[in-house]
Amino acid sequence: MQTIAFYNLKGGVGKTTTAVNIAWHAARWKHRTLLWDLDPQGAASFYLGVDGSRTYKTGSLIKGKQQIGNLRVETRWPGLEVIPSDISLRNMDLKLAEPGAGRGSLKRLIEPLSENTSLTLLDCPPTLSPVAESIFAAADYLVVPVIPTHLSLRAFEQVMQWLDQKAFKHLTVLPFFNMVDRRRLLHVEMLVKPPALMRQRLKTWIPYSTHVEQMGEHAAPVGEFAPHTPAARAYRGLWFELAEKLKL
View (cartoon, one colour):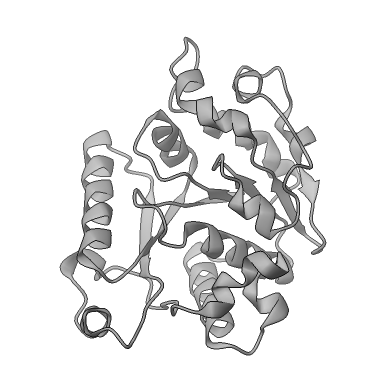
């Protein structure tokens, strides 16, 4: 089993929409896929039509009093399961600070999932905290959507500095440009001449699109309701590029 975390310190950059669309593509290509919605807001659960279908206590889960496998919910797409968000996730930082927890807690939790899952995706809250440390320890790949603006790049740089300080040597970081608006000069300039921080990025970029915004209306990935749009084609390209990196 390989684990991909969709993460950025900055909110509103498209972590959840990317995670949902990539999970959908992975399942379409016959990979047994599980998406764990770790954000208390539960947007990924909403997009996939499973919000409110499970409740649990994060503290009980971390302590082993609840089995993570019992939280899996099937979506209407074959091969794609979700562990829905729960409001108790807002206390996850506190639970990870308790004795016996630590940054390896999340990794220990998801290890049993490998029996029935080939690809686990984590939709992450925008935070640098014990939750983030536990996510980074559990993930093999960190996929970071970056809007081509200076503030978004600054947030990504902070993440990279933090990762270096914490010595997450096993983690492969894969940034990519997201929500690209080619009407904006700065966006075009960064695409043509990417900053040094983005030179090892995924080459596929996702355009700013009303179809991405409509995911909430349809409660579905873009490829499900608008398969021939530029956004759908971009997500498909991003999936193929990721699959090649993961050797799937």
